[in-house]
Structures are given as C-alpha cells and as structure tokens.
Image 1 (cartoon, rainbow, N blue to C red):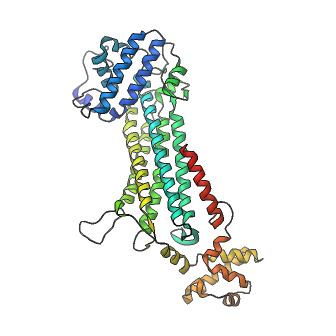
Image 2: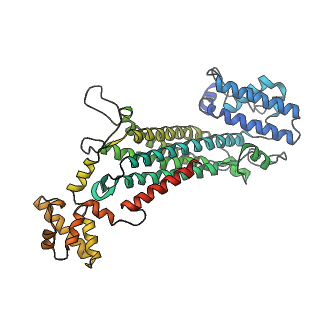
Length: 461
C-alpha cells in the first residue's frame, strides 16, 4: 500500500524500495504515530470530514492496532510497507474499512513524521533526565559514604591541590545537572505541535491547531509551515545535549579507569561492573567504564551525522531528512544505557581513602597554601610564589616531604615564614582556608552537598 501513486504509471523498482524503506528503524514510532493519528481523527471530526461515529470507529481501530503492536512480538513480521506510517494506515483499513481512506485528509506525511518524532522525543528526554537524576543521587550517596576523604586534585594530570572527595564528586554532579537542564530545553523545543502545517504551505482545512496541541499535550504550535517541513533543529538540540552528557560520562569513566588501576589504587569497582581476562587470571577490567567511554564517540558521531545531513538542504522538505532517525534513535539508546550503567558503577565503588591521602601527603600540593599564607602576612604574592617554589625545589633535591619540615626549619629557609605557617604543611589545614562558596573547604562543601540534595529533590518533583 502506498500513500501516493496516481501520478505514476508504474511503481518503484525493487532496488529503490529496498534502498528507501525505513520500516526497519522507524517502527519504534508506532505508538507515537497512532496517538497522533487518533488526535487527528478528532480534528477531522471538528471540521466535518468525519462523523462522530466514523471518528469513534477509527479511534477504536487505532487502539486495537496499538494494543496488538505492544503485545504481539510478531506484529511486524512479514510487513513490506514503506514505513511505519504506511503500515499503520494499512492496518487501519483492515480494521475500519473504507472510512480509513479519510484519515489522511489535510495531512502531509512531512508534518506527520515531525509530530511522531516530537512525541517520541519528549518521552526520551524525560527518560534520560530521570536516569541523570538517579546518577546524581548516586554521586551524592557516594560522597556521604566518605565525607572526610582527601584526594589530590589535578591539572595537566599532575597533582595540584588537595580537595575533599565530596568536592570532587560534586564537580560531576554539576556537569550532570547542566545535562539535565539541557535535556529539559531539548524537550521544550520538541514540545511544539507541527500538525496543521501540511506539506509546506499549511493545511487547507480550518483545524483548531491550539485544540490539537492541547489534545496531545504540546505547549505551543509552530509558527511557520515552511519551517516545520524543513526543521530538524529539535533533533539536533537533543543530539547536542546527549553528546555533552556523554562527554561528561566519558570523563568520569576516564578518571575512574585510572583511579581504580594498580598504579593509583584509590578505589575498587564492584564485580558486577567489571570483567576478567580469557587468558590472564588476575585481571579485573573496568569494561563498563571503557564501554561508556567508547559509546561517547558513537553519540558524538550521531550529532555530526545529522549536522552534515542538514547543512546544505534547500527549503523545504528533502528525503535526506529521513536520515535523522537512526542517529537520533541510537543516540537516545546509548545515552540512556550509559547513564544507567554509570549509576550502577557509582553504586559499586569502594574508596580506599588512605591511598589518595598518601598521594596528597607525599607531594607538594600545599605549596599554594604556603604562598597564599605568606601573601596574607604581607609578602607580595609574586615574591611569596617564588619563596614557595624555592622551598619545593629544595625539598625535591633533598628528598623531603612537607611533613619533614618544622616551623623552625621553615623560618630558617625564609624569614618571611611565621611559626603558624607550619600548620599548613598538613594539607587538611590548608583546605580550611578555602571557605568561599564553591570551594573545597569543609564548610562550603557541606553547604554544597545540602544544596545539591535540595536541587535534586526539586528535579524529581
């Protein structure tokens, strides 16, 4: 069955049908297609195309198709329809008879596809946001398990300054909170009704588009019919949000692949998220994190794919735009699977606080604390920086750790040092000076954790 054909003397070749068919991937839109078509049947009744009885017959037939598709694994077996929209119309005609021919009155497949994808994408945004919120909750729980643990923070993958473990986890909380917001914005942009736009010039029937929008739960209607026919910005918005989220997941994965290695030994991943080697019995590999890291490239590729597809298309609709769905579907699948996997990994983590603390204590992450203390005592910061740098150099040459210095030795090294500055040789003391909001001091971190809990609760409401 075709939704077109009167202008053609012959049908499409078998090669073209195979090449252009999309049922094998757009079948996942069937529920959205049926819901949209049911709403459109009600709109057709409102303009006198369908009687109340015909509308009821069509809506019920659609409901039967929807139920069968959801419960019958073999529903799509043997189907040779061009796409899911054609399949649904064929099934409708089988159940409702000739009245089914009226369902496409005043509706273009261009706006129908846009509607279906928007309906589907709203739910995917909600699903991804729920999984992101669950991951954020797991990070906060992990922070609560080790509230006083100290780790070195890094720049250039070199030990830089000491930070609290919860402060480190809150950095990722902020990333995923922004992802949650971006996914919400993507949902908002998708949540605009395209029906009534026709193929590109608008419908020739006086539909109440605002009423259709209310029927389907859309916040607004589109403003320009040509834009609707040509638009895939809402899909790009989702793909961008998904890509940024996958970048954040990949960075977390990279951190924890390193930190759980023998060279770091800070943490251990649970057996349920690791795997072994077919040859080497001792191995416990972070495969779950490596797969997250790998899938990030796949999602970024989906964004790039659709950007390149859309970049040179003239207004309005072009069949190239059929290529939006596979990257969009795959990106949504990979994002949600990765968020769920990351949450499971977080739940499995055991931190060994003594290991990162030892890394802090044996290094010179307190150098900045000393320089800033000198500056607070009146030494110009450039000079203070030089003094602290010379102290580090002398210590490296002598093989001395910060704890090897005494108050007297510091003052002998540079008269600018005061006796109280020796307290800062303990990295826990230096962190206390970082008391501004957003810093790693104990008080701002405690405040940030409490605020994060409140924010997360509001996300879940």
